[in-house]
Length: 358
Image 1 (spheres, rainbow, N blue to C red):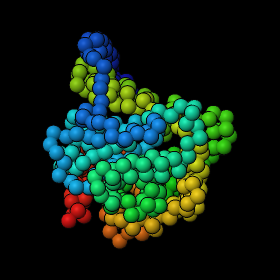
Image 2 (image 1 turned 120 degrees about the vertical axis):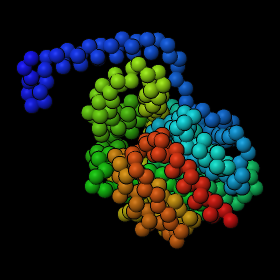
Image 3 (image 1 turned 180 degrees about the vertical axis):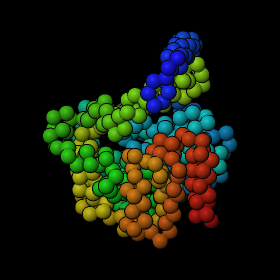
Image 4 (image 1 turned 135 degrees about the vertical axis):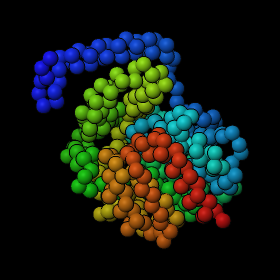
């Protein structure tokens, strides 16, 4: 049979590929029928403090923590925080607990129309500040360890600059600091938004709008390629559970409180406030030079949302003389869930904190 084109594709090869595809689809029907609802958040936790919809949880490991200073995780607003505890073999939280850390996390909840007027001051000083004050009192310590992730890292930098005596050690993961690097497509798009018109019209920013924005950053990969590739794992129940668990997290996104969204986009995406100055939380100015506690900055080398240069500039802006970087070979999500991450990230955080607890 004659081959066609530069790839030497034959009719027999096309027929075999079509038959293989059909067999995968048929097997997938059986796989999906036999699957239960996918779950996430595998580590036991308990609520210890609440302010409105914002809840502070304490994780419970298989053994008691050995660290004397609690570690508080502040995640971004745009997705749910269970990404750090997605499944038993993909859990930053589990890795930290196994190494003796006493881990807490803030869950921002799902804002509704009653939360439209929440501001950055509410999220940073009221919610993060309230959680930290609770931990300081509960543990009898003057300060806590703070781990801020992505947008939560921006919030943590602001809080640490405004309340340096309450943060013993600061860890930032995939955290944008310079929002105007040339390779930051998300920031370039945000600079063109009339954020006042958007918030004044919609109130809260719908989660579906936010998700579509992130998907459009890599449309071929995120709209088509991953679903075509899914066919190859349709007959693998474990792989399908992992795939669906990730899909559930991606699309389980809260709406964004309107005023906080307005302030964040204006001060950071549009004005690049950390670099150029002018960040204000309530009536207070934020200067990264006031971040004088030890800082561990972890960034991902293939991060398309927070490019490495957007994060590395923290070294030049923070006031600390104890600054450490970890360059992770992976992307914005891989830094939590990849096999490499399970080995490298919790151990690095634990070792870094242990050296500063003596």
